[in-house]
Image (cartoon, each protein chain N blue to C red):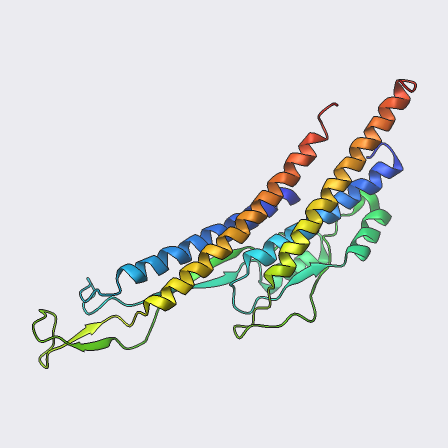
Length: 149
Length: 116
């Protein structure tokens, strides 16, 4: 059913963008974390988006058309990767996490980068929310055909 | 099976509009996906296909890449301005189709009621 597919595509994007915002918030929150369960400072995380339904097999099947409507590409967070940038070393001899030379490893997180990423996620979320409203309005209109006037 | 030929065409029109809206939704969903390319359907050929085949149009619309959009460094060329424009456009087209269908039903009802 075409119109409800539209909603699920936008819903997939909403959840992906929300996950991106969550990861960015975690990065911001842990910008000064020097101790983790894995040892060492917090490692910055990043989400990787990928378009689903992009497998060649499915594409060819849709082109042949025996399976009706192409479902359209939704989006998903395929993985959350660690940033491999080396930690920033700050000279703080009094810190309990300092190494023998007095340097403390801090996560390589730039708050400005994170804020920009967060804003990007919010804007994309809004855009997809408008797409949901548009789909809802279209469904409502087609229901209104039933209304007698 | 549609009641009148016009109804059948309008039904096809709504189908094409919904298909296009779905593709736009998927373009917007992939605004941050690296390497994603904007897709669209050719409205004219999709409409022709639907009108020729009528209810038997099982084939999904043939989508094609949109040319001439600047690509970002990550290989994505989704242009939010274009997508919001097409989103509003298809929304209004759908609204028009629905209104015309309603109108057609009223005409039918009027014929049944002998003009009253």
